[in-house]
Each structure stands twice: as C-alpha cells, then as structure tokens.
Length: 172
Image (cartoon, rainbow, N blue to C red; front, side):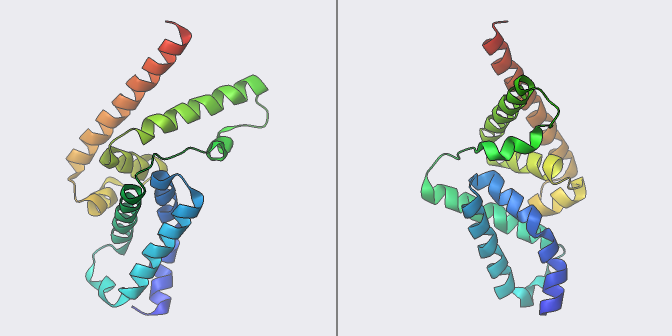
C-alpha cells in the first residue's frame, strides 16, 4: 500500500478511531497518543494491509486493544470531563434545564463506563459511530444475531440502571 492508498483508506476513519480511544481512555491526550500509535502501526505494516478484508475493522480492533492494554497498564479508573457534555446543551434552555441535561448526560456516561468492555464497545460502535451490523460483525467477529442480543440487553441494562438511580434520587 502506498502513501496515497493509505491516505484514502485509513485517514478518513481517524475521527472514529479517536472517539473510540477517548471512550475507553476518557482523556484527550491519551486518546491522541493511542490514535497516533495505531496509525504508526498501520503505516509500519502497510504492505500487509491489502490482505485484510476491512482495514477499518482492523484499525478499530487495534485501537480497542491498545486502549485496553493502556488501561490495564495504568490500573486506573476513567475520569469524566464536563467538557464532553457541553454539546448536550441548547443555548435557549434555562439554566435549570442545562444543569438537568448535564447531570443526565454525566449519569449516563458513568453507567456506560461501568459496562463490560464488549458491551461498551458495541454500544459505542452502533449508537455513537453508527456502524452497520455487518461492519460491527467484521470488527468484533461476533454474529449479527449475537450483536443484536448484546445490544438489546445492554440498552435494557442502561435503561433499568438509569431509572433505578433517578428513582432513588427523587424518592419514589
């Protein structure tokens, strides 16, 4: 694979890879470092990339594995930044509504962070990155039916946990 082919096939997915790295690492600088490592590894192995059916799937898998390795090496809990939730707010919302939305987004992010890695990855790929089931199947190696079941159970778990937390806070 030459430079032009690399630019055409790899660089367009750079944003998705960064968002995935940030999902796991919860730190912009570490996510940027992880993305750079993945891009360097892909470039170093560019001659073998033509053998893969989906280079994007390979890049996503590499990003996920690298992030998990970094988390294991650091043995730390991910931290959440309120900057991640600023895009939730609308400018015409009242201050009370803005705080409410930030709290809800923050709570949902904590619930997602508590998910097992496989569920976290699948919910991110499907709901945030809007990958098709076929693309997710290529990335994860899971069957489409298995992906659907895991996503359904994950959504139900998030829904139940979110309602449980909110019902306890409001005293119902």
